[in-house]
Length: 457
Ligand code: BG6
Image (cartoon, rainbow, N blue to C red):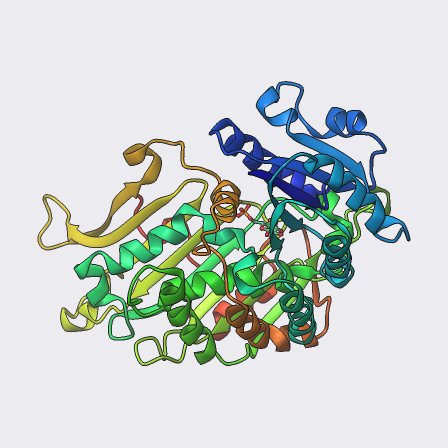
């Protein structure tokens, strides 16, 4: 079968940084497909290759990477692309087109209409199958997401649609489910009888950089909260699915999302201007801190605190599950430290469980210690990148790592108040935690997790 990924946004940041490396790795692993990159930045394939692909990239990849100057606004756009595709599939009996939309959400509608027109005018004598892949954020808000979806579902069947959230391709996410459901000791303590609170911290050191044009229309809520963070929340709090099939998992995820009320307690802000000459004055929120609850029987009353955003001092991605600490009351010893599970995603994947153990040569003095799992030490460092897993699943038509439209709809509903509020908020100096994040902690009587809080392993 001749399989072609038609890459919309083919010279964009996502394609260059994440998708092409994933395509290259998969081609090296003998997955058979070619890529047609669409873009406006370069006129010829030579120019595109020169500027977009490392000179050391193997021929197994570059031989299968083509480029077409493509302006969606051009009146001839459809016929130009149809002609190119016709030439690429000439002589093939069986063809699959994978339309990959790595575009601003506002361009989805046009792109889907064009794809329908291409389909209609292709006149292929071959057996033609198709898939469509849409990147997050799916839509701009609840209303536009529903509208895009209507158009999408008119042109494609559910089996053919892949809505991407690359966090589902991450090893730590899949590990969360296994850790929770394949260990009786964890399963038994993972609810509101034992857990006091959950923190999700995703601090990034970089700014919006070359993505300013894209990010400016998006902001932190659409960029990471409506999708990545909501997906993490579902993996942390869903009930055990009947099986690990995509359908059974999404039934449980949808239940979680439906139980979450629209976020009411939140703050947002943007980092200070880096100067007019930097081309870098962001006019949209780049950091947010919020609190939400999952109102299911087992998780009601556990506050989930989230903070995430750009231009922080330290890249820190972690989930901290803090357990209740009734022991210190029972033992009349306020110095007994809390127990917790710390899942660190960045800089490397580790899972720590903290416990109190006796300090030698003391009379009943305890000290918190950590038991650590380090993924690369245990299993080696070569886990595939999230996008490689995502693309591989698309190629083999396995929908297990893709959020459903119901999940996406519920997630938009949850963040809607954040989208409606003042769009810019507080301006924070770069490399500092915005004041509003500390304020959220103060208002709720907790402290954001930091390494010094619980003894290092
Ligand atoms: C992307 C966002 O989806 O996720 C980026 O658009 C963010 O702004 C990125 O930096 C984080 O993903 P990762 O894989 O680097 O954790």
